[in-house]
Image 1: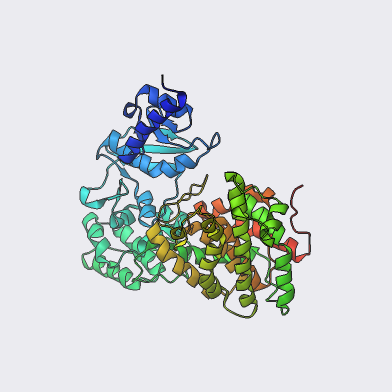
Image 2: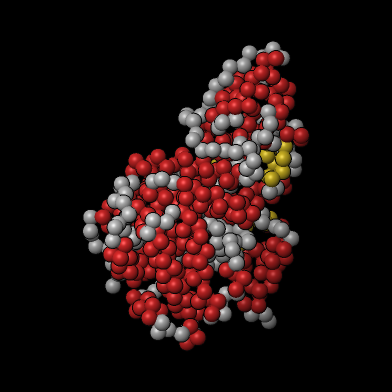
Length: 517
């Protein structure tokens, strides 16, 4: 008779076959009742709605949202294709955001269908699907993106409601910037006789500096007899420079976010003291907070480290081969890597204090910080040398976050654009806050993004004379929530205030966060 472990292994083999075939939305009919119940009881399947499941991880805690958020888009694509065939399309507003490569999980996904029932389907973790009975575009105006039926870019911009320009200005501007020529939207405007929409789009294109497209829309529409009145649908003009040559909407999204958010940072973050004249004293402060910083930064990432372990790896009195316990070895490798990376960051800070451009130094040196962070894993044979070769080569998801980081191809164009923004920024406070936020927003590595983001933050602290700032473990929830607010809603104020409060305490000479006893 098969043991419980052997029976579970059989069920996992059936699940693996489905996943190998590309299944994300798993129907109850895809697995036998025995396999389905066994996988659910052991945490390998999570029910989305009656008769539909997604794969999950047994080590996730009760109520964990990660499995659902990482499956959301693929599940919706498969589910809608199954129950509606080709009679559906996402809303034009959601289509605009997806064209702009904003894959944030929405609280409610609006779906159009000619045979819809106008019902709300409740989905896990306070998400839902709203099924609206209305017309959908002709097939020529529908695109398939990651299995989702969406409005083509021109059709989405024409059908998008005026309020969306103010609600999601970054998405709409990034989508507008993808239009290369007025002819792309003029066909739809003329065919539908959209004189009001034409005026709105002309104003929108002018808002992002595309005057030629705006003028062409107005001239052409008026030439065939339409009374078109230009109207800017945005609340304000953008200062971001969006070039026609840029092929990636991710790059323009980052530029737009930087310009839109920097004012809030300047208004709410403490004024920079200025680069100190005595760099030796500043570096002594950096050295003095190392143990506490390592404890809190590693603990935020889930490592269990002690001051004794940190001191052991700092002194070199540690041999990874002697650490036989997997968990202890993982903690020790992380602690040693943090020490090595800390020393690399310290060297970068010394150059910044000497007058070098902070953005250029971070651009040049951050790869070395990352290599040092994970080099002990190579030495111990836990990682392969190829694991440290550049940015990630696979999708990555942030635990419990509705934000979906850019795909691997986008990372390679987004990171140079990001460092250009850091390099060109004149305000140290903006380099600190947006440097950390947008780095983790891009999430360029498979692991270590949080630690790298805090290293980048503190190197930018030095560029303004702010003290090295520790994010305490006990404030982890507030820290992560403020980053989530910035990522999902582009609301940078909570994160700015969170960091600003810590910096003010440091400037006032208050005690650094201690290690709990």
